[in-house]
Image 1 (cartoon, helix red, strand yellow):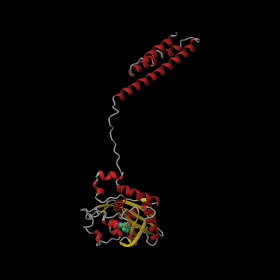
Image 2 (tube, helix red, strand yellow):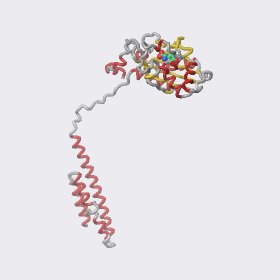
Image 3 (cartoon, protein in one colour):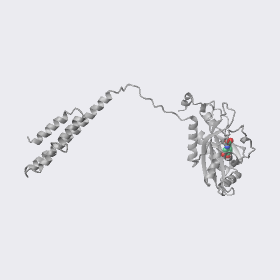
Image 4 (tube, helix red, strand yellow):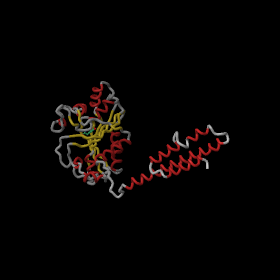
Length: 336
Ligand code: DAH
C-alpha cells in the first residue's frame, strides 16, 4: 500500500469517529489544511520522478476527494444528530401560542364594500382632516354665518375656533382647491354633531362624500351613479326614490331613499343628501384658488353625502348605533 493510501484510510477513520464539530474540524486541518499531511504531498510532487508523478498525482486527487466527501458526510450526520437532540427537548403536545385574528369592524366592512363599488365607476379616494376650520365646513359651502347648522349647540368647537367637521362635504372644497376639474372623487370618513345620543344618534358618525365635476354633468348623471351604486350594494331589484330637498351647497338638491329586500322592515330608508353643485361654491373655490379653474359657465357637477351608520345597522341587523363605538368583542365577533 502506498503511504498516501494509508494516510487516506487513517483520515477516514478519524473523520468517521469524530464525536463533534470541533473534532471534525481538527481532523480537516490535520489532513487537508495548508500544512496538513495530505496537502504536504502536493509539495513533494516536485521532487518525484517522471514515472512516479502521474501515479502519486492520481492517488493525491483520490485521497483529497474521498476525505473531503467524508468530512461533509460526517458534518451532516453531526448536524442532524444535534437537531434531533434539540427537538427532543420540545414538548409538541403543549398548546401553542394563539394568534388571534381580528375581524373588520362592521362599519369598516360597510365602507369598504361601498368604496369598492365607486372605485369600479372610476372614483378616486380623497381625504381631509376631521378637525376643520369654519370656512371649509360652512362658508365655502355657501352656508352663511347665521345658518342654524353653525350653532354652537349643533357642532363641536375647539377653543381656537376650529371645529370637528359636521359633514364630509369639507373634502369637496379641499379637493377643488388642490386640483382643477374634471373631478371624480369619493371621501369616506367620520363626521361629528352634538346630537342627543340615543339608539339612532351618535356624536360621531360616518359618511361617504362624492363629488363629480365635468362639462355637461346633469341630474341624470347623478341619478345614474346613485342607482348603479345602490343596485350593486343592495341588489338589482332595489327601488330608489329622489325627493326635492334643500342644501345650501347644491341647487337643485335632493334626498334619496331606498326600499329593498335587503332591508327587513320593508320600509323606505333615507340614505343621503345630494344635488348639483351650487355655482356659489365654485365661485368661492375660485376666490380661494385665485383663478377661474371652476368657471360655473363651463363646469357643472354633482355631489352627494351618504350616511353609512344607519345603512350598516340595517344590513347587519344592529339595533343600537352605540354598539359601534363600545368595542365589545362579543358584539364585534359577530361580523367575522
Ligand atoms: N353634507 C350633508 C349632510 O351631512 C349631506 C349632503 C347633501 C352632501 C347634499 C352633499 C350634498 O354632497 O350634495 O347632511
